[in-house]
Amino acid sequence: MSENILVIGGGPAGLNAAVMLSELGVNVALVERDSFLGGNPKKFKYKFLFPDMQPADNVIGELIKKAESGGNIKVYYSSEVSDFKENGKKFDAVIKSASGSETKTFDSVIVATGFEHFDPARDAKYSYQLFDDVIDIKDLERMMGENNFVRPSNGKPPKKVAFILCVGSRDRHVGNQYCSRVCCTVSVKQAIEMREHFPDCEAYIFYMDIRTYGFFEDLYWKAMEEHDVQIVKGRIAEITSGPDNTVVCKGEDTLLRGPFEIPFDMVVLASGMEGGPQSPEISSKLGIELDEHGFLKPENVTLSPFKSNKPGVFLAGACTGPKAISDSITEGAAAAMNAYTYAVKNR
Amino acid sequence: MALEKHDKDKENSGGGRPVAEKGEHIVARHLIEDDNIKEEKNLVIDGVDVSGRWNTFIISRVDSDFDRSFFEEIKKTVAGSRINRCWQCGMCTASCTVTPLYRRFNPRAFIYMMQLGNLKELKKYIDVAWRCVGCYKCSQRCPKQVNPAEMMEALALVIKKYFPEEVKTKLKLDEEVKKIYEDMIIGHGRLDLAKLHTSAMQKSGRTKELLGKIERDTIFKMAKDGRAFSILRLGKPHNWSRSKEAIENYLRKLNTIENGEAGV
Ligand SMILES: Cc1cc2nc3c(=O)[nH]c(=O)nc-3n(C[C@H](O)[C@H](O)[C@H](O)COP(=O)(O)OP(=O)(O)OC[C@H]3O[C@@H](n4cnc5c(N)ncnc54)[C@H](O)[C@@H]3O)c2cc1C
Ligand code: SF4
Ligand code: SF4
Ligand code: SF4
Image (cartoon, rainbow over all chains, first blue to last red; front, side, top):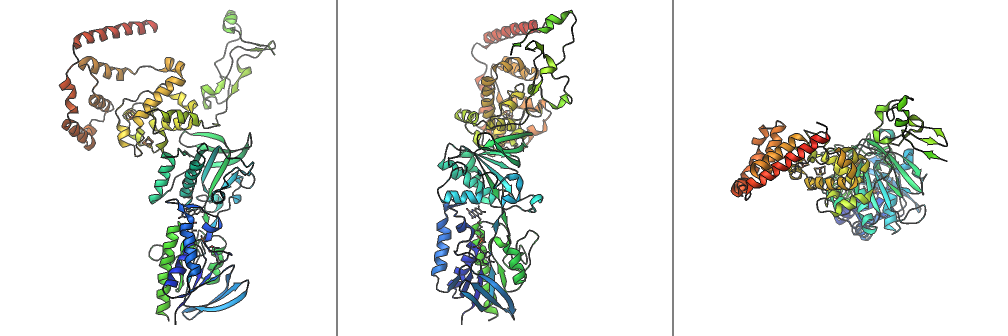
């Protein structure tokens, strides 16, 4: 008799966990809230991925194909775990979907419920939703994914675009002190894409620090050295409307020590990652710990980042904190290995 | 509306109301830069005398645009071609031979001003912007290989182009630096970069560093490839005594003119 393992969340982390378990002959129930697999990269139509600008489909499409054709994976679309109980060393879960509820016993569980994009409308100083030409990086991903890079206000290509880093991150005022890790890299990647396709559109990045960690640094160098992307030091304190249908970024140039109010055709906010409503929900439903940042808390952040505090329940991907797709996929594999070991031990 | 500007200084020489300094009446005058105050000393509009404080206008201190055309212009030059690389880490300024002598000489900041086309800011540094001695220490340190030393050359050209008037009035020779150059030329007939660098270091009291690893390595390298002795080997230029005489004559003449102008 083969093992039964529950994977909650069908983003990069959950998908890879499910695919690896399926290859081991495990029966996998993959529960996904949305009507499609692929998580945030699919939802917001990421087109090219950092660090190497490969088409997102090479990664996400590939994982979805494997999951949907893997004989041992049963995908529950538009579903959720509505009830969850421990049963000795095993777990009884009710999976609720449009076609009804199903109760099943699982040997172990992997939580891969991911993140939510910070909603910039929550931070009024950026005038998101107030001005059409203020968008954020997920909107821009989608616009580029749909080959529709124009100013929302008038449908014309912009000539001068500003990226504003750390929106919704590193700011006590919005309640998030942490760094979202990917938004710097996403921004320089998008600036490169923009300059490649629209060479006469100027790109400026307002920053406090540029955190393109590890090899992501290559993109930062490339943005400046090959595409003349200009970085300007200072966080933007306010976005107001300007003359000729422009949006004005108000800030301080901390290198020259002077205030500026610069008009742009379009502003892109690098909004960060949050644990979203799903993290506290899953935390209380499964009885696992939440951390002080609103993400799920690993048992030991260094020794076992893929384990929850509850034996038999494992964690993978951005549900434990901001990270890139490669990290999420790696953790999916690590969680799969651990969930499998737990299942075999307690068979 | 009739605008009249006339020279009231002269008209009032018979003892009218005293003419105030520009912006003198502004409360917290020290917070406002001279260039940001517009004030006509003598101005009459429609027959009403609005001279001095009655027409004072303070220009906003807020920068209101980035001028990228300036960046493009610099990037096209050979010396300035790498301007897009600079990420403002400040290693150039930190290693600069001149900065400890003139705090306002800041290659990092000058490059940033050029990147953003901030001529307004650059203008404030016309008096020091040309002070690079060409030691290339900054270029040796710069992690992005911007070649800031040559960027300073681009800067000097730009300043000359955009502020020809100010360059004429504000550039004053630094006597000490001038002396180092003069002694070298008159003494040897050639510029010796190594010597230039060591004199500058000595001048700023950094003699111990001259024995440090970086300097030692450079000396060994230059000794090995022969550059260290090139001045000795080359000797003085052909017929140097006559050239020297001509230069000294010229300098003497120049000094008399300068002193004459200054009324000494
Ligand atoms: C704008 C932007 C661009 C990015 N670009 C890149 C890039 O180019 N390269 C890169 O490496 N990384 C990129 N990232 C990071 C990348 O998006 C994440 O690393 C990755 O999505 C995390 O995968 P995940 O599976 O952990 O989470 P997610 O992608 O968030 O997937 C989680 C899934 O779980 C589902 N779910 C949530 N709650 C429940 C629930 N209760 N029940 C059932 N299902 C649930 C969700 O619907 C979702 O499908 C980017 C991030 C942002 C914000
Ligand atoms: S990755 Fe960059 S933009 Fe994002 S929070 Fe960190 S420093 Fe700010
Ligand atoms: S020129 Fe080089 S050393 Fe100087 S600030 Fe720029 S990157 Fe740093
Ligand atoms: S070359 Fe000029 S700018 Fe560079 S360190 Fe020497 S004096 Fe300073």
